[in-house]
Length: 387
Ligand code: GLY
Image (cartoon, rainbow, N blue to C red; front, side, top):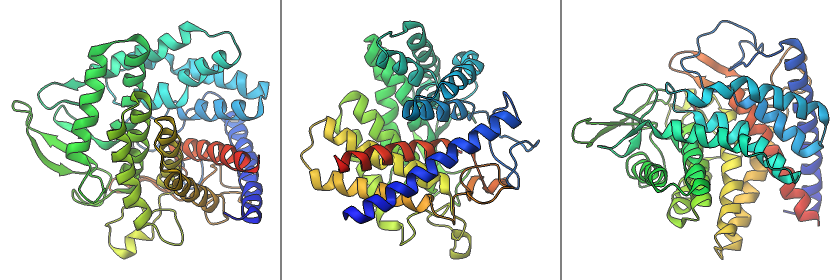
């Protein structure tokens, strides 16, 4: 990327980061202690159905990122306060989302902040480990996967984003049983959810007695054999993180395979449609959250490859450039709510559950979080290039 293009992109991303802080400040001041999931016509507070409970770590997660980048005490106090609100969820056996809650969003970041400050707090790390051990109880030994929240015979691709809390716990506590559970889950997900062309299925169904995989299906995608774009993004990012934590190249290869599919399918506008295989008319509906997650996943993959010592510098550079292009597009007027005073979210045109009609063409809390994380990663990447 030429120097001039880099500096224009940097300005655009800095403006996006500033705007994200304004919107989150507005949200917490308008609705204190409220942990929303998606907007309805741009407004956070409503009584719309949730389907499941998985988003409560994302608001504090943004606060941690704002604090990491600015050092502002306001964000630190809010981040600690909002993280504490979800601590009891470390025992939640009803959802498969404890990685979203404790790895991506809250206590891992909090613990790492204390490490950076030279006063590591083991109690914070223990909350992460506790969540990892709770999540591992979802393991189904016949099929070798962590069951989704919907049923024991169901495996979701989303769980690839949660398995890192188990893997991290396994590595940090030297627990071979947890390592086995997490590794088997990754292997089963790769075998039954990732297809030969790098596309992904949302869900796989298993025979509970034999552990045999029966079919691929979906809840939030267009069809069982289609590629729901957010699921693909979860796979890119989840396999990259799992490979990085374990220093294990096959998971990085799976992430790269999925990334390749994404990069071949996105057009001049790199923000993906909600499902790559939906009919053309329907594909006009973008899912900005998928774009934000995928961008983070591309940066994560590039960094992980470097850590494990992969030599392919050109390929890493390419992943970062596509990531930057996606973040730059998300910061454009089509997607960023900047200038729309009525809109309470940061990023427009996200999709939660199109088939149920929930959060369609709205701001969605995970889209907000991964967008903010993608801004952080892009800022660090661009500032690194300037040095
Ligand atoms: N449940 C995770 C998702 O909607 O992507």
